[in-house]
Amino acid sequence: ECVRGVLKNKTILLVTHQVDFLHNVDIIM
View 1: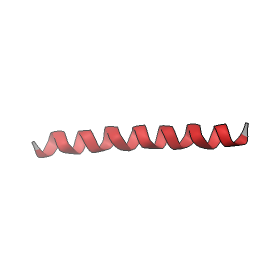
View 2: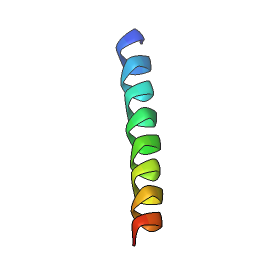
View 3: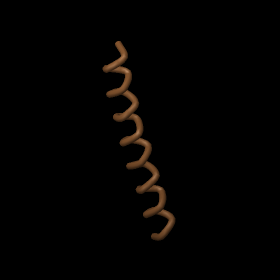
């Protein structure tokens, strides 16, 4: 249960980071 919570948080972090990255690429293009 605890491990699943950590994995979920990491996934959310990754997704948020990717969206942030794509947004920055959009500005650069």
